[in-house]
Length: 242
Image 1 (tube, one colour):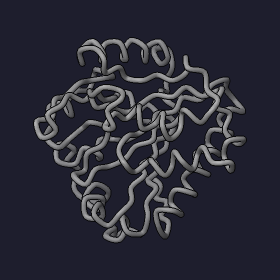
Image 2: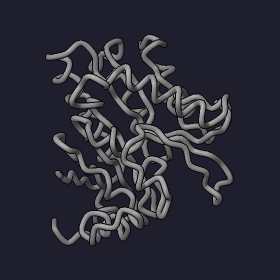
Image 3: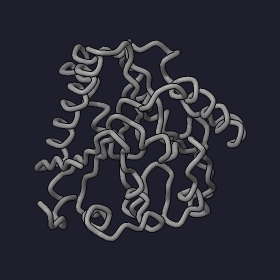
Image 4: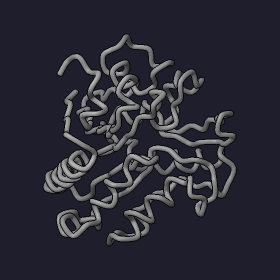
């Protein structure tokens, strides 16, 4: 695991975008396509805007990238809570990428059917590879969740299925999520966490006892790949191992 800590959210976003761009460029020197998993929520919004700025539009060859999502809220695409909608508005609508290389999680069909469809698609990519995605971007909630793996959710103990669905009573909605059994096969996984309100839970995740039922972000442990945490100083302020 490697920590990358920056002064504020703006510097964090700038350095993270540069790191992502470099990872993509270096990887594409040795293979035809790059597989990238996007995260949802509020944290990556500035990152997506940065990646479509003039500084990066010519640095990243989007024509050679396949985009996936780590999880999705089962709400219509035009609902502002939909992760894919946010990514389209801030990123995908502004880049030159073939539509066939953008793999959204469908929310216009029953969750179980959407799960089966997404899982089958992923198996066509990764059944015959030792690694899965080239890069998975993740966030962490102030309750320690990542993807749609929330504290005490039964699916945390699932170690076979690549994609799962869960109903969250607190949000009164279904969510669809990639599972650690697939994510942990990625070549690189990078969390982006900012803000003082997440500092205490971040300290527990990184330095506390291993308890993934309580702190689901702890279950993200690459089998052979790299794990990176990109943080601002506010989020990192409670860490003792700096």
